[in-house]
Length: 146
Image (cartoon, rainbow, N blue to C red; front, side):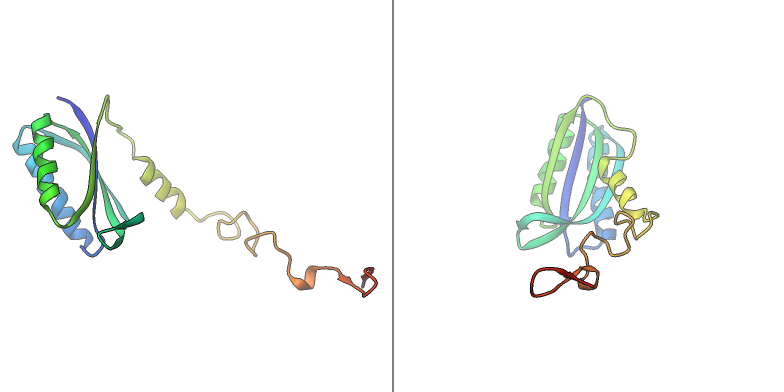
């Protein structure tokens, strides 16, 4: 059977539990048609690049699917009807990734804050900007004054 990666975006005002229920519902649609969901990843609520139906954020979910094309088409048809799904995209792939996706790896990297200075390059101030007290004072003639 063909392999697919499928990502869908759910409205920001639904709960994560409702997103899990939607994922289970679409998984059931695929399994009833002879397919199988190999991996499911919930990426969380993330900001959108632009507004979609007055939503600024959305719940992102990834499904790795091994199913016939008819099952995927039925799942997409049901997603198109649903008011809670903002967008979805299905891509046919040669093989499915077993490891966590790049989005989950990125979140793991962001969660680790073990670097000195709060993860901002080691400086407590966070940047290279000098405060007024650190700047040398100049007299009216332009010479540095102590």
